[in-house]
Image (spheres, rainbow, N blue to C red):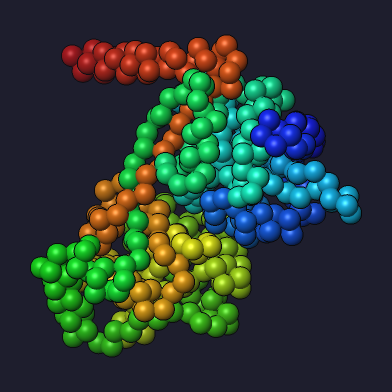
Amino acid sequence: MSSTLHTFESSVRKENVSVRLAQGGELRPYLAAWEELAANALEPNVFYEPWMLLPALEHIRDREDVNLLLFFGPAAADGVQPLWGLFPIEVQSRCLHLPMRTLAFWQHRYCYLTVPLVHRDHADQVIDAFWRWFEDNPLRCRVLDTNYLSGDGEFHAKWADALIGRYLLVLNEHPRGLQVRATSFAAYVTNQLSKKRYHALRRGQRHLEELGSLLYREVESIADVESWMEQFLFLESKGWKGQDGGAMATKPGDAEYFRNITYAGFAHGRARLLSLDLNGNPVAMKLVLTSEDGGHIFKIAYDERYSKYSPGVLLELEDLERWHADSKINWIDSCASARHSLYDLISNERRVIRRTLISSGARWGDLFISTLPLLRYVRHRLGKTTKGGASA
C-alpha cells in the first residue's frame, strides 16, 4: 500500500495534525524523529522503538499488511514537521474467528506491550487525530483490537477519556508480575518474600555451589555479546521450548531478530545480558531491555538439569540485589503471563494489561461490539453440543 496523507484540525488546541500511513521500508527518513519521539513519549514502549521494531518488521513479520501510522505536528520555520505519534498497525480479516475486518495494534510473538508512541506534550492532539482518522479510515476497518495495552498510567488515562461514548468490549485483562524498586534489597525481600522461602532459595544456592564454581556474570564489553547470544539460544533450545518448537533457535528468522535486538540494545545501552555460570557454563540466563525509567524481562532460560536448585530464581535474586545497589530504573516488567510461578514467587506487585475491542463508530462496528458477547456464547454452546453429540 502506498503512503496516504490526511490532515485533521485538532479539537484540543486547534493545531493541524497530519496523518501518514507508511510501510516499513519508508521509515528510514524518519529514524531521527522516531528516536526523538521515543525519548519523549508519554509512556515509553521499548518494543515500538526503532532498534526493536525495524528488525521485527524484517525478520518475524508473518503478514504483509503491517503499516506504521505516523502523526506529524505543524511544520517549523525550516519546513520540517515534528513527529508526534507512531502507531504500528495491521489489518486482520477476522476478529475472534468471526468475519469482521479489524485494525489491530501490531503485536508479534515477542512484543509484550502495544502502547503507541505518543509525544507527552501533544498526546491529546494525537489521540484525537487517531480517532478522527479511524472513524473514516481508508483500510475499511470498523473495529480496533488494542492487543496488550497497559491498564493504568498516563497514556491509559488519556486513552480512556477518548473512549467515552464509544462501543467497546474488554476481552481480557491480566495482572502481570512487576518488580518495583524498594529502598534497599533487604526491604524488597522483607516486603516480597517470606523468610522461609528466601532461606530455602539460599539453601539451593549453597547446594549448587557444592557442585563447583558459581558465578554471576553481566556482559560489559560489546566483544562478548555474540558469545552470550549464542549461549542463550543454545540453552533455550535444550529445554522444553526446544522440544515443542518454541525456542528461537528453531526458527531462523526469530534467531536473527534476537541477535539484532540484543546487539543493538547493548550498543545503545538499553540491554542487560545476564547469566549465572556453574564451572564456566551458564545454568540460567536473562535479557533485560530498559526504557526511560523501567525495564522489561524479554527472555529467560535455564538448564533444566539443575531445576531442583531453581537457578532462574537465583539469577533473579542476584540481579535484584545488584539492581537495588546501582541502577537508575525504578521498575521491571516481567512480561510474563498471569500467575507465572517464578514472578509470583519474587513479587507481589502487578501491572494490569488489557485487551479491548473498540468500534470506529460505524453502524456495523457498533453492532458487532454490541452482539459479540451473545455470538461468543452461542458459538461456545454449539461447540459443547457438538462435542457432546460426537461422544455420545
